[in-house]
Image (cartoon, rainbow, N blue to C red; front, side, top):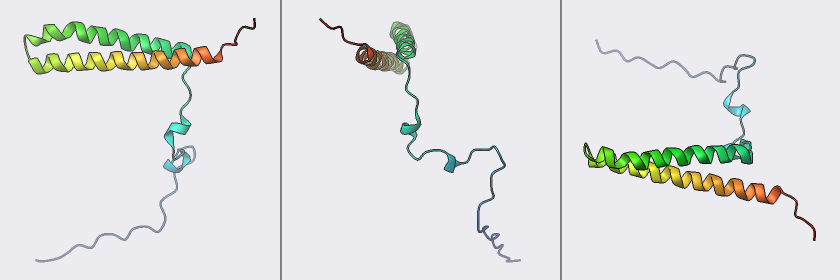
Length: 106
């Protein structure tokens, strides 16, 4: 038997989402515009956590070198990336903190 099966016709309009369920159209096209700014204190905590994780990865890289050079390189790379992210977050938080403080008058 040589029968071909025809696909079902596509519906004219998509089914409506149930009430209370967000659809893709409910979100802004530019996701960056929808982000909330991170408070300076939270950014400093995030920078500290990134720095701590980066230092731990860098310390653990030589230990992993005995089992695999690729694994050691990955640990070192992860450590440097995390330290870079920490510096970036710290610099942005410091800049934000410095611009919001009122200047003293002489």
